Image (cartoon, rainbow, N blue to C red):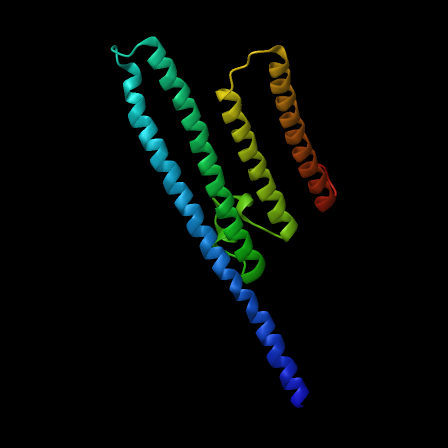
Length: 187
């Protein structure tokens, strides 16, 4: 009888220890909100600075520099929002996997299926796709800033773009294959 109580107490403690994941959920959520805030502030300041773009007193070289800077800032803003999205998906996924299913997500008509996490593999796949998008945005950011001087450098750029295309193709092919294996029918 004593051993049974000890086992019950230990199993209760073990099961309740999953609630420590709430710390990661809250920290991820606040990190995501912070990234949304930072990206929004960056977008606001970029838009304010772009008002100078139409100024007739701006020289062509200054306009080109402002344009190049704006493109870089747009890419950084997209990167910030994507990272914020990763943190949000991560927080929701951890919560659904370890704490409880989110009832509102199941019943909401406008709910996106990207926010409904069924398994750890599902969470990893969704995060992997967003991380892939972040890497693509970073590649684009660096590709815009580089001054190409030789044909070999352009060939490297082309190879990088081809590898990005391959990565996107493979991620879509994996998504289609996993859809077939779950439902038995192609999507």
